[in-house]
Image 1 (tube, rainbow, N blue to C red):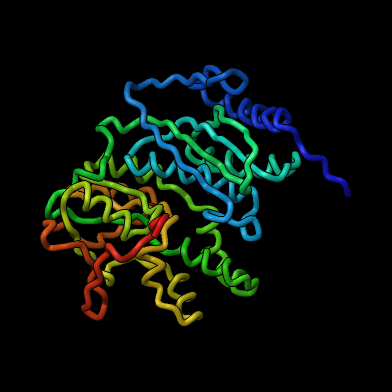
Image 2 (tube, rainbow, N blue to C red; image 1 turned 90 degrees about the horizontal axis):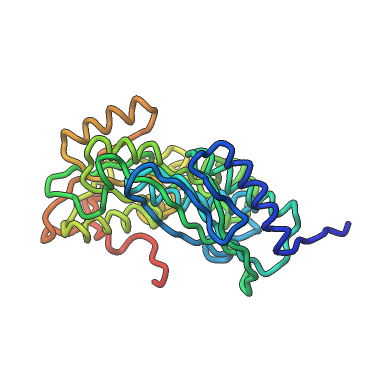
Length: 335
């Protein structure tokens, strides 16, 4: 059956339609798609801004990801950056580029996943751009939000003696990617929650706000892996850290997959990335408040280590007592 593909104008028309449907529920939108720029009212003073991008063949493949999944992940990447500073995302600009023409069904699927993710945190799509690409599908996302009333939680505020906390558990997304790379339907059916963690990661917006409210000293999301992102905090705070493998919250699904495949899950939960959990530092008093408040909202928080002086290094103590330098773990784009 012949499938009709859309022109740029038709694609923009659909994006505008979906964006305008959102506008009815977001009073901050003053001018949406249709002019050269959007107009959004921010009730506070300061504005948090971040941008992120995902590319076919680098961050996703269309043989494992649906277009809806791609849209969801693109939105989640940007939203998580705002959550990592304790802020509330409010509006998004999205630029879309593709080399093969898309049908209306495909555009609606892509935008459907994108908007579905935004609606989980009351964030609105207000504009963007559409362009032709010579190298597959890509999305560039810019998110604007407001900082917490106590101010933004940065990477540079950690202090010696601060406890290191982690929301949820890391490694599930990396395990999900492992399953997808195997192209084994039985394995995928056995561990659907791990696959879901990779295809549709869920940023911790509410947790970020709670952690900021309780006075965390530093925070970062685990987009590049727990080790790499904690190292960012160490570098910016000019400190070191000691983690303990025995304290790390690893999901039972991850353990089961590792046992089934004869794999050591260490690299998954330390360096896998794209879980979008939050790793943070806080004094013992603040950590207790964070644990209590997050617990009341059903958000798991675990103490996984402590910040130390820079000359002590940054490492994780494995269950056998050996030490691994965390600088050797995690995702690096050009490694």
